[in-house]
Length: 244
Image (tube, rainbow, N blue to C red):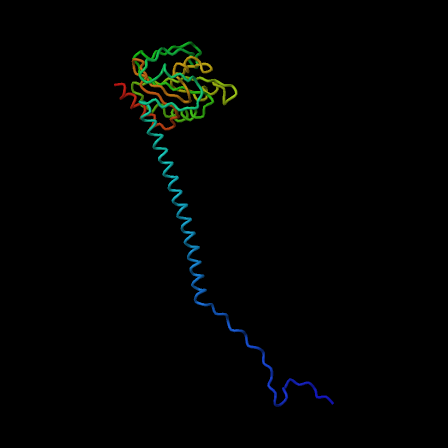
């Protein structure tokens, strides 16, 4: 006969015990140090990257401020310099309106009347001529800035005259619509299709500014938009000071 199975081990035997759980692995000090060094290195790289980004942002801000300062300075001192920008449209011969030369009468069509008009730069009035094109965004930005503030600008002895030229029906709003919507408070003379006035003033870009004293002598010329009223006022003040 067989004995019934029993969980009690026979006398003289040692029950087999379950194997004890393995001891937790111990990390060596060297491995710990290596891991810490790696973490510090990653953190340092991240900090350096953030620092470089911050430095780059500061440099971009500084460059933008420097560019604005240069633009402002050019607007203020340009009245005494020949600084026409390149790359615009217009006649390339500037000899007739070079600084120091006498500017002859300017004839065209008055806007909005459509009547013939002649402006004599030698009639004793100090003038600032703005040459613009209806499709030029920088001309539009200049008008958008100056027209609403025109009543607050102290022109003193200076008269501003706008020459509208280089008409192109395929670009921007038509000239008549452009002028009607802008409604400039200063005199406007139409010079059709880069006509004689553009050649007379030596236009090579838009907008172009030409300043004359009361005797019609060109005392300054430059190119570029002026979309800040304070800068324009500074230009007018400088023009009055330079023409006595």
